[in-house]
Image (tube, rainbow over all chains, first blue to last red; front, side):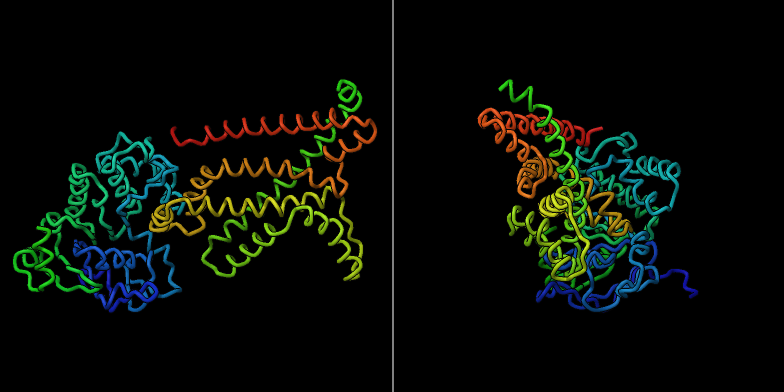
Length: 247
Length: 223
């Protein structure tokens, strides 16, 4: 392999069914290192399911998913090792309620013996600084606002030094005035070159930060391309209808 | 009343000690059984879930007095006479402890299963997404939260089990009720004796409830 830029995610012909309901129908995608891919589309289009397949929170029914060179549809692969390198941020934050902020950040690095306690603590504090919450290290999740929780969740994922970050509608559960602070952190991550796949309804963010935007509907990627092209001159009829409603 | 207390007080106190000992053995093993079966019932494996369900339904469907007779008389009979292996004798304390452990264990398993299921699945998913194995996620993230919601039900179950020790008077274990029966037989003072015995149970259970409240307050998250 002598490519300068490698594909960090390679998905081909992915299908996913829940019982008889086919949620993903033949989805393929490659993500290059450092790329920011934004997935938009109506509710129920399979965006979140697709994202959750990328770290096997959902098992693919058919198709191939290669993350960092590991085929995670292979039952024998060490999925925990792959997940260490794939950070995920959830719509509902999912901070560990039984731990304060600092311990939320330190849990995985220390428990998986990536770092000793002192190094992990130092890095956690530094990471909190980067998301603007250095003063919240001792707070418990229930004492934080939604925006603060989500920034902690991002910091928690970053503490594992992931090769790629997955965002599952990270601002959908937030009060409108808190959306900005979370998007700011995400923009910063994009600028420092972290590979990201973002499922979102924030069209402004998709346009400004995305290197590539995918439009999904009914379990398929119907159109993809640079944000300018997708938003200025969409070709697909359903994308046109979708944009006319959300923009 | 005073005569009962002065003459039979020490005897009843010892009997209360036996009751507590029996309850303690029973509860200790019930916690272990409950934890194992409770976790089995949330595993992905169908076999594990089926075993857990059969155990819980079986125990819940049989009155404890029947279970007590079965373990104390039936199991040694099976072992020694039917199977002809021989040499198995169970003391009333052993049989009683096993009986309590099985009975209380089944209910504890249900409490633990419900407690685990009450924790938002997002907590497990977040832990797994960081690369923690299922078991570590359970121990570090899910169980600590589940136990908090389980505490009132567990204490309730402890109290029920403590009172259920009285059922084991039927296999001749010298716990409080059994001893009280003897006191009544010797004195014919049934009103006084049973009033005292009732008060003794009540005091122990009230103390247990106080301890539970303190524990519950301690387990709040706020640092």
